[in-house]
Each structure stands twice: as structure tokens, then as C-alpha cells.
Length: 302
Length: 220
Ligand SMILES: Nc1ncnc2c1ncn2[C@@H]1O[C@H](COP(=O)(O)OP(=O)(O)OP(=O)(O)O)[C@@H](O)[C@H]1O
Ligand SMILES: [Mg+2]
Image 1 (tube, rainbow over the protein chains, first blue to last red):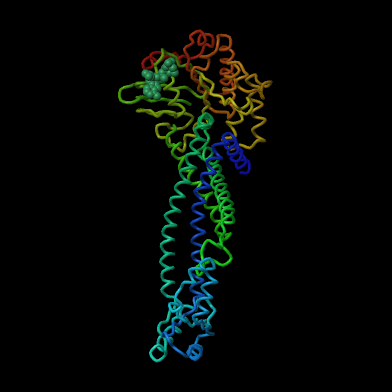
Image 2: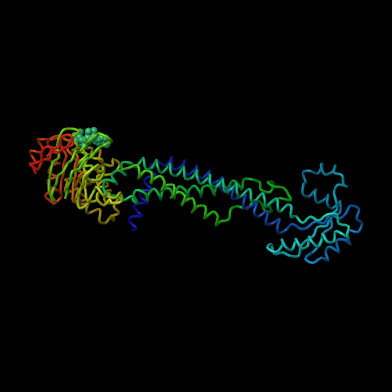
């Protein structure tokens, strides 16, 4: 058993060593395809994080009726509601200061802003911290606020549902797009590896002819190719991971997306288990591609 | 060991390479197959190691019914049938030793078993002193010895050779033929296709003559 594995390994090493340039081109091309796939993965991971955070953190916002005088009193009544942890009242000046902080580069623009257009708001912080239970809690508070609307100076209540729904749709679309990209990338990898294996088979054709002649089974023809394909896939995936990581470090992540959509602490990289799964998956795809290439070869040969 | 019953082989529609051939070579027998170019000698040998399938008739080789042989059983047959060609078919980047060892490696045999067997068979064909040479460093006769060693290393029951001396002069041809008679004496069933009438006379064994795909003479 061990000597067979050793022989398969030696055969694979021999054929890789016999055409290093072809191997290098193949692995780099695979890496590029997988990097595109990885980039899609990174986008999805971060979009996921964004949606989850919005779900978790989007506080409700109460818009008092214009000209409402007693904002602190209104805020106190809102604060008294079940499920509300606290409020923060932003009058027009505070709102403008907030905007300035969020968009420091657009200060001249904000200077010209008609202050009357900036409504005062009361931000509401929910008591519920558990992300899983925040949705229902928020809905309950929003309902209570809307009930207050009838007899309080409340113009509108924004519970963030609109934004979350839009992000949700964006995420669904991105996932579908990601699946299509993934399929294309995998197809490209299968294509590259099976063609490289075909080149290998062609380069080894005199050996393979002798193998057939002396009664070697298909396994002995195929196994070194499986190994070669798996190595190509895994090497391509590792290269893609490294490349993507370097690329993400090179991009100034903080400036990538502005507040309030900004991603705290920069973009998140793929989780380690996704990287491991990707490398193993690529190796498996390599085996599959080799199987296809050798299958064709074995059917064609006598 | 080898039996053909009314075997016909057509390539394509009307290219009749073998026409109703029946013959029998006993276990441990030795026979030449001869005849003019295009008579069907190579075709006959190809049928015997399942490189081609008969269009009609039955073939038995070393206990295998080749007309019913599944593709997955072809390797099992070939471990029992050594084949030698006119053009040697050696792996030029591998040494003499590795060329012969390769035939056992690809059957999954362990190195410890391969080395002594390869050394023994190379000494048997008179190449004990050239094991580390590359094939192109050898004479034609020596290259054919390597090919014969490769065919014999797995101790096949049957040895087939298609014009094994076609590229060699008369003296070398005799030396090569001695290797075949040697294998025959050790119990291997040997079938050699050749044009060389002088050689056949010198060896003095059974001769099967083909013409246009039919057996026209058989002194066995
Ligand atoms: N692969 C093939 N496809 C089509 N026809 C073939 C093929 N191989 C052989 N033939 C035909 O079958 C006939 C017998 O050929 P074969 O090679 O068996 O003859 P041979 O006796 O070995 O000749 P030679 O002495 O020249 O080697 C010839 O007419 C040849 O053209
Ligand atoms: Mg011939």
C-alpha cells in the first residue's frame, strides 16, 4: 500500500517537474479564478456582517412634529416605554454637528445647508441586546411609538425596517450573483486542470503505452494524475488566499465605504474555516478534473 | 495455451486482415508466424494480447476467452503475455534497469521484490553490466535485449514478438533468437512473427505461414 502511494507520488512529482512552466501558468490561472471567487466571498461575508449589524444596532428614530416645543418631555415619555433603554435628543445644531463628523470633507457643502431642512430627532436605544431577539423587540417598540403618534407631537417613526429590507434584497441578489460567479470560477478551474492533465498525459504517452502493454490497471494511470490535479487545485487556492489577503491589506478599507454604512475596523477577511474548505474543495475539484481528463484518455486509447 | 477457432478480423468494411484462421499452440510450444507483407502477422499477434478484437471467431490465450474479455480484464491477460516489437519501445529517459523495473512498478510491486528480479532477468539477457546505461547509449541488439527483459520480467506464460530482429543484422538476430529459445526452454510459450527465412531455418521450429489473412502452411 505505502509503496504504491510512494510510486503515485513519485510519478506525479516527475510529471510536475517535467513541465514546470505549464504547471506555473496553470496554478496562477487557477489562483486568479479563485481570487475572483474569494473576492465575492469577502463581499458576501461583509455584507452579511453589515445586515446583521443593522439588524442589531439600528436604533429607532422618532421625528418630532416641526415646531414641537417640549422635546425633553417627549423624550422622557418615549423613554418610559417598555423595551426602551434610553434616548438621545438631537436638536438641529447637534444634528448638523453629527453630519459634519460623518462627512468631514463636505464641510463647505454643509455650511450652505438650510438649517431648517435638518429636523430635530430623538434617537431611541433598545433595551434588548440579544441580536436574535432585537427584531421583535424593535417591532414592539415601533408599534408603541406609533400608538403614541396619535396624541403626541410625533411626525414619523423610522424603525429601520426599510433599510434592512433593502439590504436584505441586496444580499439575496449578491448571493445569487456570487453563486453564478462561483460556478463560472469552478468551471474555469476544471477546464484549466483537465487541460493541464491532458498535456501531462500527452507528455507521458510513451510511458502510458508501456503501462498498458505490461498490464497496469487504470488506477495506476489515473492516480498520479489525481494527485497532480489535487496539488494544482490546492496550490491555486493557497495562492489565491494569499493574493486576496495582500490585496485587502493594500486597499484603504476605512475609506472604502462611508458612514453610516462604514464597516468598523475595515473589511473582514474570509473566516479560516472557509479558507480551509476552499483549499480542500479546490483539491477535490482538481481530482474531478483529472478524472474527466484521464477518463477521456482511457476511452480513446486501446 | 493459444487457440484460435475460425477467427476473422476486418478493419473497417472490407479490409480483411484475417480470414477464418484456426490454429493451436500448445503450452510451452514455439512457433514462427511468417508470410508476405500485409498477410496479417501483426494482426494475429495484436489479437492475442487484446490490442484488437476479433470480428468473428473465438480466441483463447492463457485461459482467457478473448472474444468475451471485459476491458477491465485486459490488464490481467497482459500480465500473462509479454510482448516485444521491432522498434523496442523503450523509455529513453530511463536507464536500462528502470525500463525493466517500470514493468513491475506499474503493477504495484514493492521495490524490495523488484530489484532482485530485474537484476536476474537483465543478467539472463546478457546485460548485467549495462543496467545503469540509457537506452540510446546501447546498440540496437542491446536495446532489443532490454525490451525482451522487460517482456520476461513478469514471468509471463506467453511471449509474443513482432519482427523482433527486423532492425538487426544476421549475427545479432541469432543472439536475440537464442533468448527466445532460452525462454521457451524455461517453459514459456513463444510466438515470433518474422520475414527472416534463414533465421527460421537456423532455429528449426514450427512455421505457420499466412497469406492474405489465411493459413496456407503449418508444419506443426
Ligand atoms: N489498424 C489498421 N487499420 C486498417 N487496416 C489495417 C490496420 N492494421 C492492419 N491493417 C491491414 O490489415 C492487413 C494485415 O496487416 P498486418 O499488419 O497484420 O500485416 P503483416 O503481416 O504484419 O505485414 P508486415 O509484414 O508488413 O508487418 C493489411 O492489409 C493492412 O493494411
Ligand atoms: Mg507486421
